[in-house]
Length: 241
Image (cartoon, rainbow, N blue to C red; front, top):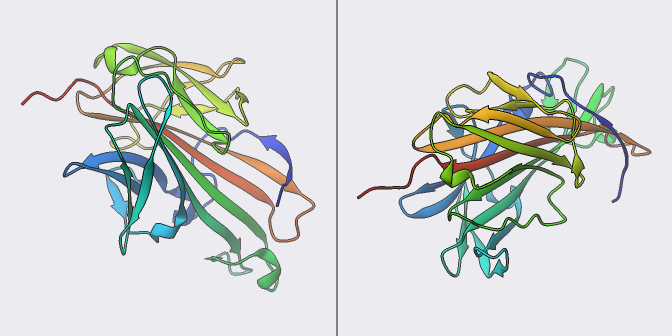
């Protein structure tokens, strides 16, 4: 279904007062596998692997690589056929409706008597693995954070400028979290009219830069808004054996 939407940029904090919507998404390499992580700050949770709707892998020139989504009982992995320069995933957390008692249920609005509001939560993550990678953004990726320059060559403690895009256009007024894993409520910068924000690379290890926004939905009896989360992940310094 294609929705007619009106953008509502979030000033900061959680999109909805529920842990369902507070969680973010990022990509992290664990035990040699590219894991899709669903969590909040230092905590990550189990989730239904079918929620990972799509995954893309690209080589250093931005050309697509064949890849698959490996689904386990409580999470998913992305498995490219060869070493990727970048990987992107989207997780659809489904439609959640708030009941009159303020609790949330994973049902469309019309199926909840006396429903107060309903939101569909979509989460996107881009991971960069190789320097000088040309980054490709799939059309299905509605909300993304892109580094302006080579994020892998900046280094901890140095400034990195990113651009936040919503529906392929610069998103102004978006608060950017510079270290989502360690300080998920600390805003590092806010995007300007061109969607740009400059922040400091925090970690020698994995950096997870994040942002959130939402869009109002019209002419849909089951849904009031789309809630978006995006993250950008990369290592602050290369691995040393």
